[in-house]
Image (cartoon, rainbow, N blue to C red):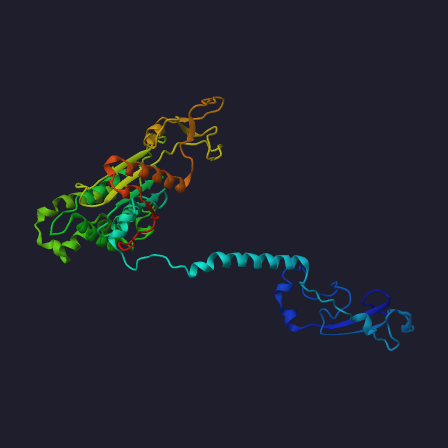
Length: 437
């Protein structure tokens, strides 16, 4: 012979027919560097019936004078490979093994525990109201709604839109204090100034028309929500350098006042009745139109808190607060931990301190520096920022509002002083609607 396929000597040739779906399944070949069934490709040894739907084989001598096939193992005299050498028993693998049984038992046990814990609750009746009743609010000490801003898209416009929704959520005839708190984690001065301008708008709400101040406030903020609820971050967020005039008019409340005066019963009152409200809206408009998204950091290691009460505290249960906890500059090498360590700003709490001393104690803060250990074993050292991020800001608000509502001037003088409170979080980039509560 002039050429050979394979080595000289005995040779086996096996033909294997595979299922087309297996051959066309690309997932079986996705990790292969070679083409499917390329010449010279190595394959697994017999038995072949684990992959072939039909198999047969021939045997003989390649590239040398013919000799009897009986000298080749598994080769029959007629030149065919003995079928017993090509196929065999394929052991069937079952999942009835100990690890699988253990896994299934654990799943069944967990499901049984869930059933025992949760299913009885389906049949246990509980007291609930099908509609809002102002008497429900008498069972609470206060309702706290917190909006947290931290930076990025959470600037003045985002805060104002968020605060409009929080104030609009004031339930009708609320019989407990409804506390709206803006917590500024970015520690930016302009945010506090803008909050004050917003409070002036709320405080300038007229009291006329045979309705209370609170009724007019709820009506105004409900329309204000409609005017601002569809605003998105691309129109009021952090990338905006200057508010569009139409957005500005809606955000500051100018279009709200115009709409109420035109469509509601406010139109029958003289112009001078709106003078104070118009002046407050103009001041808020000017603040939003000036240096939008340009901020000045406040003193890093100082807390800033501001309170707002209505002109007549008997006219509404609404109370508003602004908080911005200290944000000292921290060395990037320091690990953010919840205990006092080197590089941490902290304050000391004496053994006889009371909750009302909390803010005052935080003012006397220090930084723990290298090689200057504080060996004070009497006072407790507390980190100025025990928890970082918005979660820490929410903890700060909870502490502050608890202290504020325990002040003598906020006492109900009834068992309501010991009632639980309701804590709600209004994400800064969203807006509550008037019917939320």
